[in-house]
Length: 91
Image (cartoon, rainbow, N blue to C red; front, side, top):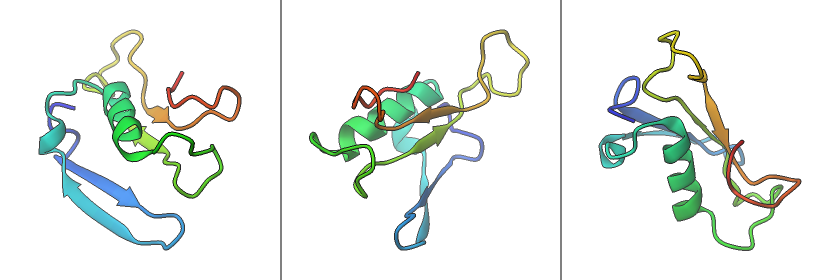
């Protein structure tokens, strides 16, 4: 993430409506949004969780080239459990 947009991660609990902010410093080794999304899903979503379970997460993340106009640099990466494959990798 290379410090993210502002060095912060915003977490929103859609069940309770609680919003919290944390530093992105622990994720500095991850370069872009896809790696960040995979790490969050791997560490925070237990095996066996289904796509529509409350324990599932939806991760919106940006990479270091977002907004640069560089070819093949997406604006946002969304990672969650797939309803089709039941996997936790974005596409």
